[in-house]
Length: 626
Ligand code: PRX
Image 1: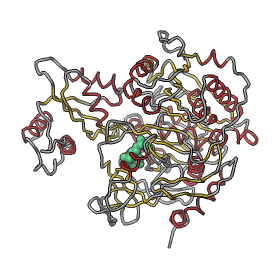
Image 2 (image 1 turned 30 degrees about the vertical axis):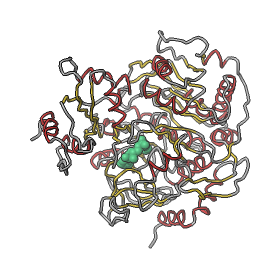
Image 3 (image 1 turned 135 degrees about the vertical axis):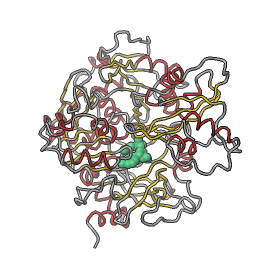
Image 4 (image 1 turned 180 degrees about the vertical axis):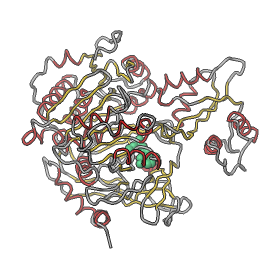
């Protein structure tokens, strides 16, 4: 017997156009689309061809009639001890104002804006104002330092940057503006203007005459402005979000407008079971895909109240999130496994202290959810905890239980089943044939990718095809670069990446990017960075470096500080070991997988191609393994 969730999935694959045409009714179209899908140029998929819409209109304006007085956004900051609520009406006014400010700074349709801000309401206004104007936003996570930011500036070539004087983490102020200034100095395509929201966190904030614009002063000129939404063709770009890959160069994941809006709205019902008028609390940073999709776009498009949280999960104590659930009657919550592993170290009684009766379920994604953590939180909360799997590239879940369709039982450690729209395959690495039950293989998606997924890499169609669709010579399929397995009951399990991407506390990082940061130290000749398992953070980077001049004193602390400055503290290696040579193949490839295996106490695999076995011995000596 086919189950309801399987029925929905089957329909979405067998009748793609029919399925998505129905879903497209969830949003407002200024001009109806002609064709549901144009797939004449594989693997590029164009959804809802010719249709015109606007993300800001769907997220804000459309709700004014029926839910203007309902809260759209509730900002809670345990960093600056503030709470602020915005009804849809107030959000509309704020977004219009910021759109007017941006217009006055010369922003036009298609222009790019880099937003480098912490979780604060003005960041949401800026994002939605870009959408309103048809400008392309690119939010960069505040944890990235100047060099990473400069690389993103050079790729996106923004006309405007929006930032704040600083953020705060666990009570410690982190100045943002000096990093912005430094990144602009390093970049070849500096923005003409920088709009700064001064929160009063950094009294020493430097200003650049003629370029820097104070948010509050400028906003004074634009009270009660009404700025029309710019209607965009469905496939025009809405935003770019940079993510790590195999090379050191970050990839600008590009999203469209119409497909994105439809996918967001559908997922809110089928997967997250969130209805208009309900409240969702997604604990992510707005700089990540989860923040884009499930703090901002999906909840607002679907008419929910979204909680934006600035703070850590354990301040003032490890019950703070559950208190928020109680106080704001949260219905849907979305967090990351790392956060739960952090909470696990605290008093479990905190899970029972508050009234969580409003909460339907907790969703977790971003990294593998280990079985003990899954069991601990599900049993502690006595709520369904839904592990689900997706990527920046897909923008919404690829694997998940779909309790909006059918309440399937949860298996600990498994993100359940393929979501509607994804023709998911587990392919053998050797010949792209389909793997059987319980057989480890590459998680792949038969194109076209469904609406809401990346449409290309910003400015580089060729790289999009080469990176994602060229893993198998025999078959043009999208590779997730994850290993997976399906058990006999049809449940999937994700077993880690096939490439050099690591996941530190849910933050996706390329080991090449960290290597480039290490190499910026003047006394480092070369290095290898690998990810090793970490109880709390999932994975941590570990660096092995060769010095240029061994006589010159260089400590691991020096190298770590270089990484902090170049990439940001999130990329800082757990340890830096100094060696005189790295294990490489005869063709010069560093044996990263073997190093990682040794560091995790596993078998380093086939070493017959190694150039100099002495190099591996050095790694073993550093790690204290035999
Ligand atoms: O390796 C997979 C892991 O995180 C990667 C995507 O990270 P990012 O682009 O930051 O997107 C996060 C959006 C949720 C994936 O390729 N990953 C994500 N979710 C899971 C996971 N690994 C195991 N289980 C998951 N539920």
